[in-house]
Length: 265
Image (tube, rainbow, N blue to C red):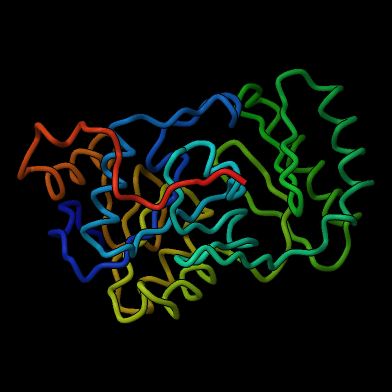
């Protein structure tokens, strides 16, 4: 697909869907080591206000993990690549109910990880992620191990590859299906979908946004269905700042306010 490197001008009729790791934040050796920044929270705040709430995080992380990462903000979100979703009104939708079948598979993969220093097995409930970022030479071994795990899990699961990770996840849900579900609801309905991501796990989102007449933006290299490309996270954040914060840079670094926030339970 022919791509444009100059990103489009901000449009208040957009519905903005944002991947997190590799798109808004740099990767770390372990997912729990990733930290958000006041700068990014301000940008999310401003986008949310400018787009009347039509901003959602669409991530491989669980929604609970997204809330911890961006606290005190509590945005609409799709977690586990669409297996769970929180609407703008706070309603939760869990599409995966197969995590009980992963118990024996998890034990097998845990033993595999224990035999290979540098690997990490992340338990996401209805999904398992095998990370090899700290042991890239073990990529092929991990691919074989996760393929055997998928066979053992049986019908209803498949392997999703990503940047230095293989994920065993339920069939039928992806970032594209999450985008479609959001676009059927307020405040997203009737807007132009804009999907921003960086990885093969985002390609379903790119294709869906394209199919709906929207905009798709890939951060970094690699083959993609995205129609726009920007080379680094920093340049993406600067593009957001140029569109959202140019009017008053002094106020841009204030603490987030007037946003949906987490409440004590």
